[in-house]
Length: 289
Image (cartoon, rainbow, N blue to C red; front, side, top):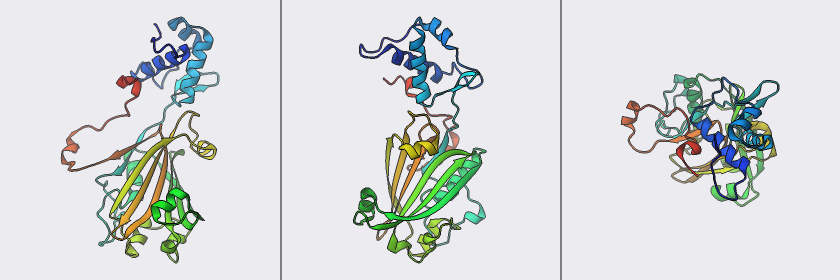
């Protein structure tokens, strides 16, 4: 077995890591068995032990592999959950029904119910820790809400976990004047979700704009998500609108190795006859550089 040539500037351990990614993507290794030990990889590739160790370190840092003391190196298994960021809503339980004058029952209107439905469909347990804060608006949040930077805003935060594994941090940002005197100021979750309060205030959300970026987590985020040091976050920033203007900014952070956002666009009636993808496509498998 040989290491791909790569570029002249590419160190040998990085090329070895790339070939191990390829073998992982092609299903050569499974979560049930340990990867070949370092001495075996050294023999397979004809490289020094330190080169093997550095290559494995790269994949550990990316969150693909985990070293278990006294047992070996294994694929790190993170079940990937599809979150319907926008599209046809799942079936809702009676208690999740919206008021008759609320927005159409899509994923914009009932996000809490969507998360519960997705967890149930995947056979996983969803738990949520909730808190409410009054803070000074960041520059980007203030701009999206039409405020001056530093104005007071209400932030409602949800820390979601699936089977006790950190899944997402969601923060909904509201103008203080909109939230004042409403259940949005309470440090508890609201029956029917924040959407029910907004509908009662005549601020039913009818549209949204999403901004998606990837970035590395900060120290506190890395500690909470418990991901590998090289695993980025997906950050979805959604600005919702009614006919009068922006209503709120929802910033949701996901660990990129255990989440996939799904957007449905147009008529999806024929989609029911197609099998859903089983897992994200790895760039190494797709032949990307």
